[in-house]
Length: 389
Image (tube, rainbow, N blue to C red):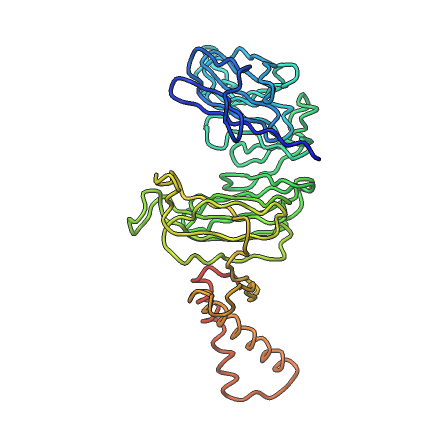
């Protein structure tokens, strides 16, 4: 009989932090000695082996199951911490300050968990998107500096940047999981120019993007990869809601893109308001979405609209190439927008067939020629619905 996996939970209150075991008793972990001052933040490593918290005087790293102290880093004013996927590295961020000698404050630091040694440090002004992003194997690490994506090899931090790519207007980069990592780069809408997402293979940054798509109503975005790193969800948002229905701006659209560039679609949202949180199926190929006013089970309004993919069901989506993924309810379950898009794409397909006949020298009737003349209007209508054609 397989041994049961242990469960553990961490909590942080205003003046305390603690570890408790799992079901059914949720007993405190007696071997854990909490600090005598409030903790600012805490994190588990992605694999659950390690636990760390930050206090005003430093960071403490524990073996989670036994609550054994592994490292104590003497660092002041740490605001946030982050583990690499395998728990080999711990990154810390503190608020930048002006140094007396005028040099840049290197407020983002990376430490070896096993030795406690500081391996590398960077200047990082903003807390938003501060974390170094590591590939699942920890062979590479990525960060965005200005409009430049910089790539490092963690086993050779001393070599500095080993690859880089400048993307004009880039405001965020999101590294995929999976064995063949990609980076999704978001460029915000500016001065009438549409926003865009471009996907590059991490091992071939100099090559053209494998996938790219443009959007309107997109000053910022949330980007979520599936587990395999083959598909990505992009939720676009504006900074200001022109209709004044949301304090956090207006949701522009939700899109599903393939990293390979062979598929993209807009996910239809039936209701106004931000998307609710969900989860991606572990296999990474199936997905879905929830929409409407974001109010979690606890009753508190969600701080920001967010996206993800629930465990079951296929995303209700209309593909840019005209296909509509099948839904359990069949045609009747499609919302009016999805039906309209499908019908417009059918018309485009019919027009393409007529144009092929025309190329072959076949004589077309007057009504068929009139259909061809409507192509531009149909494409314009699709563009207004957020569908590229």
